[in-house]
Image (cartoon, rainbow, N blue to C red; front, side, top):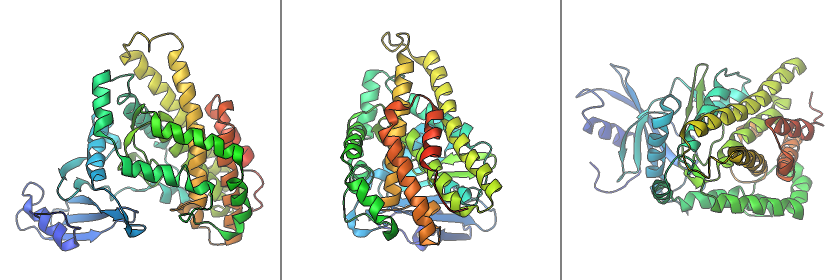
Length: 407
């Protein structure tokens, strides 16, 4: 329809929708609204006024929306996202949005409308409880990570998938914003001036930075499985009986523990933030306990399902050596702890902070929550080799998160 790539307008999106006869009735009157609030893309919701049928159009921009055209980005990430969603749908069709069409020329994905869901982060800030969350995220992680790993795929197919999902520009964002910039005085950093002393202590902590260097190397070199690559609570949509993982445009082959750690980090950030968001002590403790229990259940559910898949599907003689799966999962857990720590510190110090903390209006109160988040992150990195179970992750969060005076 369009000869070359162009960022769509609302009018363009409607015109495009009319050009595909299988989506809407001929002559259908449509409402279209650009609803994107992310950092990188345009997102349109298009609905037929008569039938109520609706679709989401997601178009990649050739630059980072959060910064502007001074930060160019490849449109290839759009293909990677669409293919990652389709691949996930083979294993967990109920846990990702359906992809109906991908237009390579426009870097445009047409997918299921999830307007009856909300972004998980927004629900957590409000103190909402989601009964299926732990079970669903554990299932998503185990299924998507196991079935794209060398433990299931033959060597040739695995290497072909690694090639197919090479994503250097998006990986470079993570390498810089998660593993580099927050740990020295980089231009991209943006943090509460009241925590500068704490931030400078992190910049000067050689022991911590050495451990982060090891984690960065792992992220850059260990192609274990196809990761979502950016699995925070803004990349999950929920309602009480449904969980949908969205936005895998950072997908690439990396260490399994990275996705697991990203989820845990964001639950821990929510845990800290509720010292301010929930003032009633009993309500606060109940909700914080639920957040930590959810993190623990995600790990235990992931481990249980991963072991079951291993037992059923692993055929390689060496992978079947007694005790090897224990070593694999032990390494994943310790990796997850370290990656979670980096994710937490990056969200306090670096570019693109989280609404959990940013929505705390009192800067002094926010500074306390941010300080606790940094300490939890720091201890997760430094103590990751001492983590033997999910209970150890929770212990670190509780111990390092103590000391807030907001009551």
